[in-house]
Image (cartoon, rainbow, N blue to C red; front, top):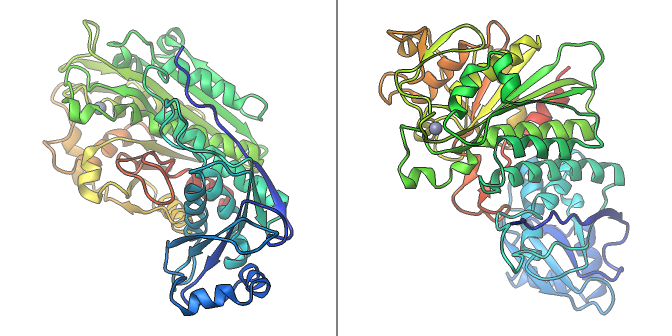
Length: 491
Ligand SMILES: [Zn+2]
C-alpha cells in the first residue's frame, strides 16, 4: 500500500556552549547594525576577527532574510556557520519563527547530525517559543511520496540560551502545525472522512483529548441531513469528529469548528480541472482544528475546549445532492441548494448546530470557504466575519502578536436578504458573485444562534502555490499559532 514519508522528529535539547562543542552547524543572527551577538563575538575572538572583517568588507550585511552559510575556520566547534540576516527594524515574534525556520530549511539539504540554533540572543525572551516552533516547522515538506526524501532532517536540533521546558513547548507548537499540514498535504485517496477520523484518534492517543466519531448512522440519527447531503454522492460516507479537552474546570468551553471537505469536486456543479486540482486542501479548516486541539492538550492549557470537524467528500454520482434540493438541517432551518460547489457552508450548518448544543462561550470556525475571500483580500490574508466584535478583536490581537495577517469584512444587515430563498428559509449562494465571502458568512450566521461567533475564511492562506524561504509550498498550517495564542491569552 502507498505510504507517505514518516514524520522524522529530531531530538530537541538545550546546549550551553554553541561555539566550542563539535557540531555540524551553528545558526546565528546578525542585524544591519553589525553588532556582534555573544556567539558571533566568541567566534570572532577565536578567529582573529574573521567575522568583523567579513562585516567590514560588506560580505556579511545582516539584511533581512539573507542567509550566509560559511565554512568555519575553527578546528574544533561547528563545521559550518549560518548567519541569518535580521534587518534593521525591531524584531517581531514572526521574525523569530521565520528566521529560525528559514535557517533549518536551508540546512536540510544534506545529512547533518547536530545543528545548533543560537538565535535566542537576537530576540526578547518571550519569543523563544517561536524560535523553536519555527525550526520544527521546517522539518516538514509537501513531497511525501518521493523515493529520495527531499529533505534530511537533522538528528538533533539544539538551542542555545533556551531551557528544555520552553523547547518542549515550542516543539509541540511546531509539530502541531506540521500535523495540520500533513493532513492537508496527503492525497484525497489517503485522507477521506473515515480515515481522517481514524488519524485523529491515532494522533490523540496518549493525550487528554477525548474523541467521539459520528458515522453515517449516527449522523442520520442526529438529524445531520446537511452533512449527509453533501457526502451523498461519494462512496466514502461522511463523519463528524468531536474532540473534547477539559483543562479549565467547570467553565463553558470554547468551540473550534472546521470545514472538512476531504475532496471537493464541486459535485454536480462540477469544477473545471484547474479549480479542482488543489481540492484535497478543502479540509484545511478541520485539520487546523485538529492541530490546535492536539497542541492545547499537550501544552496543558487551562481551558475547556471542544473541536468539531464536519467531514464529507463532495462527489458526483446518481446519489449526489442536486440543485433545487431543499434540506432540512439539524437545526430545523431549511436550505435550498442552488450550487453544489457551495458545499462547505452546508456541511458547517449542521456542524455549527452541534457546537451550539455544547453551550460554548464562543465559537470560532475555520473554513476554506470562498474564492470570493481571495478576490477581496488576496491569497495570504485570512478573512474574519463575526457577530461579536469583542471576540473578533481578541482573535485579531492574537493574530497580530503571532504575525498572521487577518482582515475583518463587514456583516451589515443589508446582506441578510441576499441569502433568502424563494423556496426554503435560506439558499446556499448569494446574489451572483458580489460579496461572496460575506454572503457565505451570513449563511453560517443562521446556525450559531446567539453564541458569540467568529468565522475565519482561510481559502487563500491555508494552501500556498509557491514556497517561501521559511516554508514549503502546499499546506501552511495558518492560524494554528494564532488560535493557541488566543486560547492561552483568554481569561
Ligand atoms: Zn466547493
